[in-house]
Image 1 (cartoon, protein in one colour):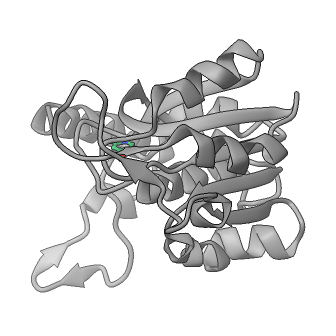
Image 2 (tube, protein in one colour; image 1 turned 180 degrees about the vertical axis):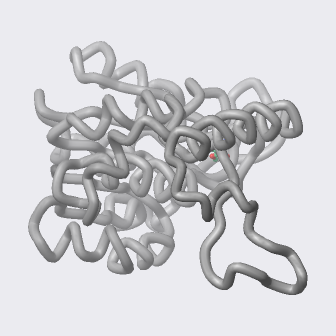
Amino acid sequence: MKIDAVTIFPEYFAPLKLSLLGKAQESGIVEFGIYDLRAFATNLHNQVDDTPYGGGAGMVMMPEVWGQALDPLMSAETDLIILTPAGKRFDQSMAAKFSKASHLVFACGRYEGIDDRVRQYYVSKNYRVHEVSIGDYVLGGGEVASLVMIEAITRLIPGVLGNPESLAEESHNEQGYLEYPNFTKPQNWRDIPVPEILLSGNHGEIAKWRAEQAIERAKENL
Ligand code: J9T
């Protein structure tokens, strides 16, 4: 999979060389391209934003520079992802869909966002364009949101995780995570023992206990 990101802060993407993502890149499963938006500015001061038509607070990123940056990246293979708190909520099922894509382009807006004509233009040219939010809060820009998505998506690509069973195991819920509490060594830590049942070797009873714990936890975190 090819993953590109366009940003005014390419340094935000330094963590891509670490851990799972770094290994995925080394093994050729994913290839990252990070593009500095400012390199595509055509005006005198490499300005990328301006005041909003209609007034209001903040600055809006100008369409011309975004068009210059995105045009050479876009193809029929591309899913363009625009990060915005007003987008569709990112979740595990969206991650699973994007993990089957061949080319993702992350457009990281700063300030109050990107001139909406950028989205309109690529939609009108029949490209696949997705406005995505990672949750109900505002960030300084789309960079960290892109990293969140990239990590969630790439770990679902076959060959990226060491142990592919951990993806399929039934003890994971639809969101893809363990719902019950986990314990490892030592058996007793600061006078807190590991629940007896987990030491029993009785897999049926352990599965039952974990299911109960999952329900308890779901109630607590409502
Ligand atoms: C500027 O971008 C954001 O603030 C953003 C992007 C994606 N998801 C969010 N929840 C916020």
